[in-house]
Amino acid sequence: MIFCLRQKTGGETKASNETPDQINPLRPYFLVYVLADGNVRFGFTHPKQILTMYRELCAGKEAPIETLCNLFDRQTQNGTDMSHYGALLKKVVESIAVTFRKRMASTLLTSRNAVIPDRRDQTDESTDFELITWLVIEDDPCGR
Picture 1 (tube, rainbow, N blue to C red):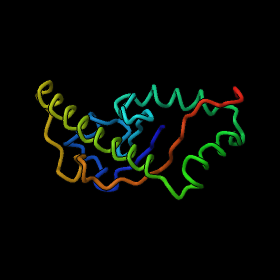
Picture 2: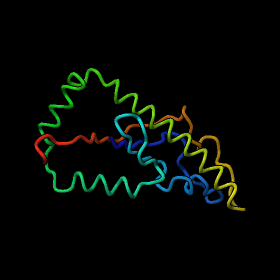
Picture 3: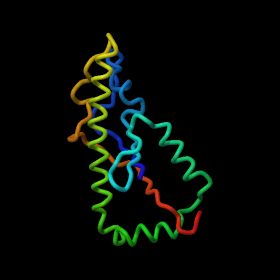
Picture 4: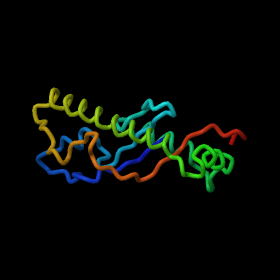
């Protein structure tokens, strides 16, 4: 599944503090590809790979694939049981927080000009995100 989230707080880069943009060039947006088991395959530091995958999966598609939509509806009881996807979303937010901290520390260690971003510009498990879009990736039983 690919999630696109937008960080609701922060996001306005100051000229004197470019560190948040060095950590995530798509800021305030975060793209993450997570597998069904909760393992993050591509985190927000790999937007090109995620966008390439998204393009390859969706290019030329003008309508949803009905068999996959029906499968999703059965799996989620017509959207009333989204617990699996909620758990995946939680894993994605945790992954964003961990990766953000690692990238921030790496930036501080490798650049003399690096500074710690303002608290409101940092990302952690309590960061307020807005779900922009998501794409469920399943094998099409009809091979389309």
